[in-house]
Length: 355
Image 1 (cartoon, rainbow, N blue to C red):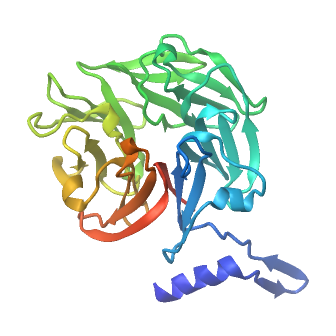
Image 2 (spheres, one colour):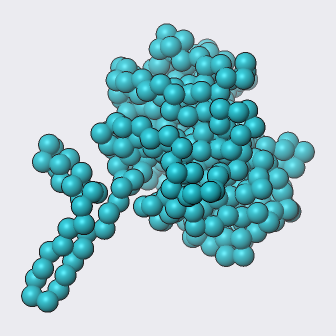
């Protein structure tokens, strides 16, 4: 492991060549690989521009990395999410004018922005082909899914029909299709139309994938018992597990997340301030990390490291008093504290692990 780490480090700082006869091969530098990007919703000033922070594989924190790399440019304020597809990162902004900012994954240099949009307050984005994408918005009066033409660099102002109940949560993809909740329905986007796959007794809380690209649907449980439903690769339900609704509600704003490399699904029970976990193999749910006990006052983002299962929680303790600084709490997969990194950004809204 030590030798492998040394090799990765050397590969990212040196340009190595290997000669064989007349052939020369150059190792491509990837200075931002094997790290963590933190998206700040704001800056020290409440209405200031958004930013990116980077933690490298040695744990070194670098602030304001977007504006440092892209001289004279800033991210639009109120950035909400960062999504990876192929060799790019896509960053959304509620305020604009850059509703979507696209940057290169290796250099973090600006590729392009989308300023032409028929809808404002863009929150979450996804794409399955790099040509057409979809966003949802924070404006409840205009809730729904909106198509993004990445070639023309425009976002439509007309939502997909019957998508007004799509919740304000990350938009999931399964087998090159957008699959998400729409109120009590699980829906699939097909040719800019919604196809209802299933209807449940309560609202869909989210769609996640565990190891082996296994698809799980979370369904809220406020009147009924919350449940997780397993789908096969053809989106046929093959398993269902109910949880104790005295301990778990599985709220949509608890933001279901999974590393995609192990058997666990995580979410926050927002009324309790507790990070919970469901083991898809043992079919057991547990309360894993009590935020107040861990020192977390107001969690604004949480993600799982696919490389080792570590749990990352961004805390913005004085969010409602106007102090927007955030701290990062890192736990191992058993919920044991590993490290706290202070002042990693301002109102951190999303976390992503770099390849």
